[in-house]
Length: 237
Ligand code: TMP
Ligand code: ASP
Image (cartoon, rainbow, N blue to C red; front, side):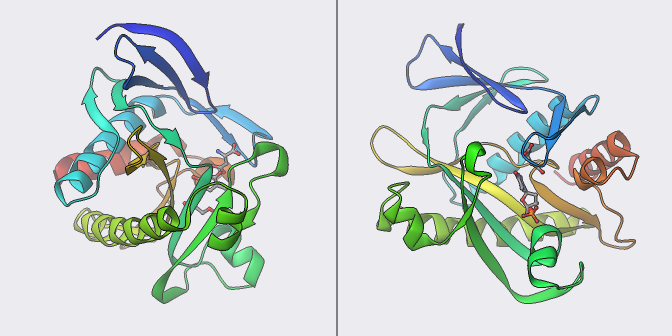
């Protein structure tokens, strides 16, 4: 597979065309941003960890019936993925109150929900990724009614699978953000990444934060946290 033109550079990844029009190459960077790019930094080695972690988790999900964009890991930072049109929706599932949920609703971080919640944000940096519901998403033309139902079903199933898996690693899956894409034949598949950048992961025993909140909140020990969750994952695959 030959790497061709760069298609896109995002906050944490670059995407390249390949000699196959159906296949893209993703390259993970160490760059980190928060608060819609207002805070900028680097997390040494993050790109390698996010690449490997996302690939491991996507393969696990795929084996449990969730279609994903993963094709093949090429090296530490680069992976081949199926080309999709990304639905401009951030899909957020929460098991425990934290972050914007705690802030918006005045609920202390750590409150465990009886059942998970789902929410959507319209992916639009200029508008600051505003929250929207499934009707808004359809009205905005981001996806069809059928597609949003598929996304919901997959998102809750992904949550159950990831929650169980992380719990075997001694890690509590607090919440996470995923994105879906549409293949040229219309099939909806899981795309983007699943990593400590996009999940809240707490040590099940101590509650220690092992994710990007260490960077967002200047808690220190950012690299150590990424290395620790990756180590836990490697010990349990
Ligand atoms: P929030 O509590 O800030 O809304 O974040 C919920 C989850 O989504 C958390 O696991 C972090 C993740 N997330 C992203 O991956 N990208 C983003 O731009 C934001 C705001 C959150
Ligand atoms: N990556 C996002 C940004 O820079 C936000 C975040 O993960 O907190 O806006």
